[in-house]
Amino acid sequence: MPERSARARQRIDNPAHPDDAALVERLLAGDEAAFSGLVTQYHGRLLRLALLFVSDRASAEEVVQDTWLAVLTGLRSFEGRSGLKTWIFSILTNRAKTRGQRDKRSVPFSALSHDPGEGDRAVSPSRFTEAGSWSAPPEQWDADTPERLLLRRETRALIDRTIAGLPPGQRAVVTLRDVEGLDSTEACNILEISETNQRVLLHRARARIRTALEQHVQKR
Image (cartoon, rainbow, N blue to C red; front, side, top):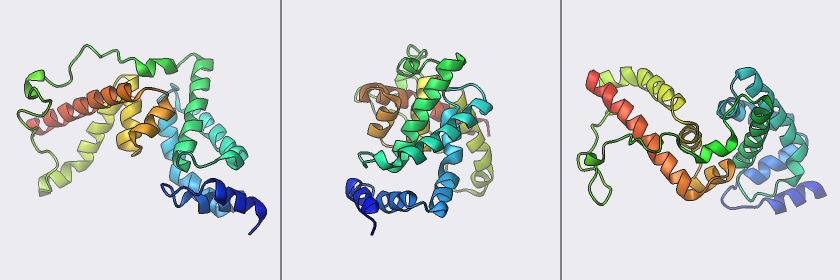
């Protein structure tokens, strides 16, 4: 094994991300198939994330291209303190922030920690007990009945529209947590917000999505 690859494996030998070491080793060795697979897996997701910070698709595409270049040039510095996916998302977010501020067309990055809807309650307080649990559980909306199966595409479109209409902070957090599947620590690191703030934004975003889904079901 080449010395460079051995050092790469030693740096990122993280049991929480067991597949990253082998992939980084292949990338450092110039494996074009490995890089092509990485682009195929993440390009669309990076584009979606970039659109949280810039206002048009052309800018988002440029940010994503800059991100891939940064991944290639910075791969030797990747030490596995986070997963490779989280590292790539962090690079994208930093570049999207810079692009949005330069173009002066995006919400300031610091605005992610401020929720303009913070005084509004997405779900009525009467639906919760003093302990914070549901007093009347929401109606089940995802049962596998034939009708519900046919409506899943419509439901997914509703979720996408609801997420798109959320305040910036809520939209960013719920995208990372529930769409991309990152944990709270990863989302906080990428967005540079506190755990408490992340938790509040996620709760409000999920509550708004749940409310939209319930209203949709009640109309059926």
